Length: 196
Image 1 (cartoon, one colour):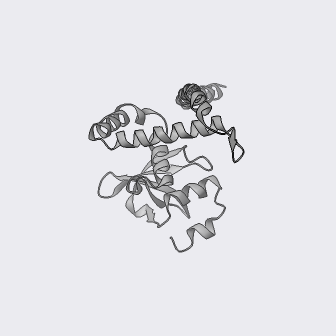
Image 2: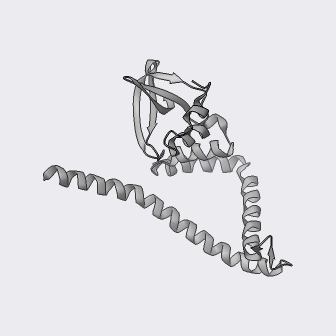
Image 3: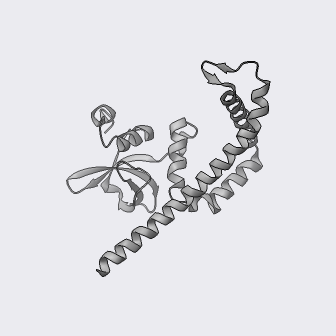
């Protein structure tokens, strides 16, 4: 009975720790969408048509706002001070959110923003099998920090420190590895062909 209570408590705490950052993000998104709606109404009223390609002018107005914001933020991101602020926020705040680093690298890889920052896809030798993993960094000459994702949710997994001899390098792209994880290995023959 005691083991069941301990397992229940650990599961509940893990769930709360996982859920709180997601709830904060959802609340922030909701607030941003409310502000976008307020901005979109006057812009939508200025557009000369009621709908274009079956899409209402309010949606076009939101699209134009997001496009303008994206360009503006892109210009700001080019500034040296913006990079320093962004790095400070990541180092002191964002990396404390569960899964932030992994999501950031995955997002960058998916859009091709920073190919150099994506984790190296490797296969981890586990007795008689190989397991898809990501080489995070070399800890010592013989020890490597490796993240082993869960299937089908790559945002959950284990951090292991393993010897280099247990790692098999691959030519699998980060994007393809995520596809394999989400599809529970379906399409492995096509994706892995010539990359092992």
